Image (cartoon, rainbow, N blue to C red; front, side, top):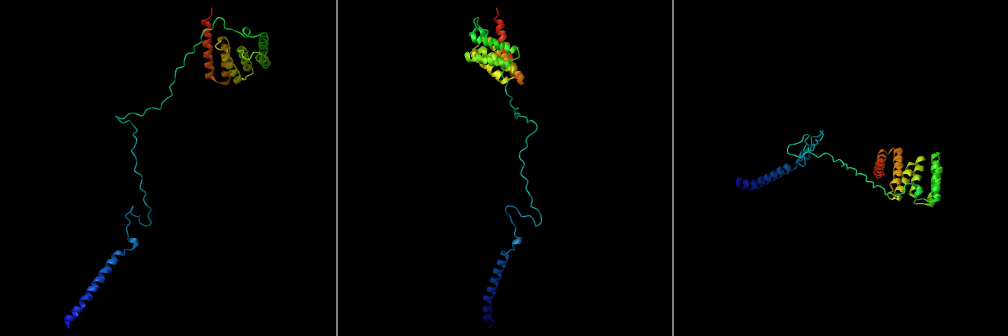
Length: 218
């Protein structure tokens, strides 16, 4: 009877061993969630402690002193100052007209003389009216336009004075006698507006014309 009991007990022991092995494997796999370790991307900080911030990696420091063998930084570029071109004035021909009377008709000549008298009497507005009538007769008479610029200058209308003087210059076509008076008017208008550089530029024109006239004097 003993061998038979031993043969019956062997399968039972084998079954018990297998069940114990399975239970052990299941116990090892069933690890509590709180005890698992996180390996990606970084370990979690312990409970109650703030997370650590990883500072960024500093870049290469710029040297404060020049490094031998390396080119020094160039200074900021400055605008190049170009020399001003000299003013060239051609001396006038002997037959160039020097006054309004030389190119004007009788009616315009009378109105120009009237305007001169009115300006001398301190009546620039009346002089402007006389010159406007003269321009209706001879609209391209650059001497009349020059006198009109002076009348505007007397009235302290500096912008209009310079504009009319420039128009007279464009009509004069190189007549330096009328251009001389126009640049004097422009110089005075710019100086009154506080344009020192512009006034000096006009003065340079005056000087150049006067030098040309002096060189052409008999």
